[in-house]
Structure formats: structure tokens, C-alpha cells
Image (cartoon, rainbow, N blue to C red; front, side, top):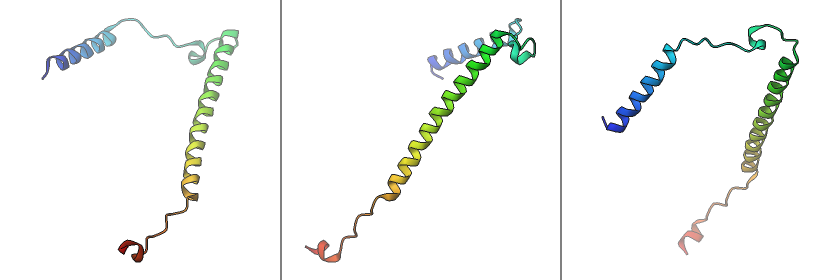
Length: 90
């Protein structure tokens, strides 16, 4: 095993062990945890989530429509005429 791969594996193992053995608890936000969702901060967070979701959907629709455009363009192309035997012999 090369020395750099061994260092990478050791670093990954140590990072994973440190992450799993840490004693801090992860706290969920108020919207996920279910407390005080009527606050302006929770409303702002919900609007932020919705605006990011709208942006992602817009980009995905743009990508999908581009591939539909390419498929239609490829389907509308005329195939090259087949060469005849007379043109091959000359």
C-alpha cells in the first residue's frame, strides 16, 4: 500500500472516530423540533427554504427543457442520402 494512501486512510479513520466519540448533541432548529414556529425567525427561515427550492426547481426545468430541445432538434434532422453504387465506382 503506498504511503500516501495509508496517510489518507488514517486521517479518514481518525476523523470518523473523533466525530463519533464527540459528546456534543446536535440540536434541531425550531421548525424541525416543533417549538415556537410562529416567530419571525422561523417565518424567515421558511421563506428562505421556499426561495431556494424555487431556484432549484427553475434550474432543473431549464436543464430538462434543454435536453428536450436537443432531442427534438436531433429528431428533425434529415438523414444523409445513401451513396449509390455508381458514385462509389467513380
